[in-house]
Length: 275
Image (cartoon, rainbow, N blue to C red):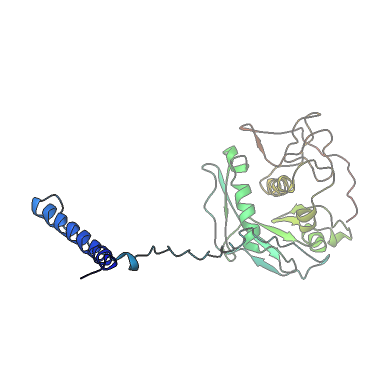
């Protein structure tokens, strides 16, 4: 004869079996009736049930993006260079649609560091072919060419003493070393002005560089010096802005508001600063 404790244990032991039977019978009935399809039910005893914790993802270290800021290389040069040259390679498209075609080369003295002939040439081509440049007058077209071919003039970036040689000052015993010039087929940009500009110019170095390219090339295209047209007005590009503005404001372009800006022919008696 079983004790009350045995009956309690037996009843408790039947509990999971009865539950499993009910679940299985119910699932079969639902499957047969078409209400549940493709479902598998697995019974796991309570003693073996557990809640699995989702793994915590490890943090991914952030990648350090490389700097995209271009490194600025300073332009350095001696007072007197070796007078040997690197001519920019290749050629540009013809800038302008009408007028006489002028071809030019671009060369950088090999003693100058921090700027290559091709880099200088890109600035020259962009300036001379700009919408406010000489080709916008409709009178001329311009094209940069490589070494070896025919050219009307060469634009040099030269050290101060080499500037004196190319500009003809050295031959007459004169020392300038400060300004840029045009002498025959030589269009000479003094690297000292390219790097340092001029005092009291009142504009960015980029504007001065546009001015010096357009001014000296303007001489090669047949233009002479001009005077300031009035206090507060823009200086004509053929004014000697390197030596003084005389009440005008700095300007690097021949064309202003779609028109060629000109002043009266002439030049001021400004002294050339010491180099």
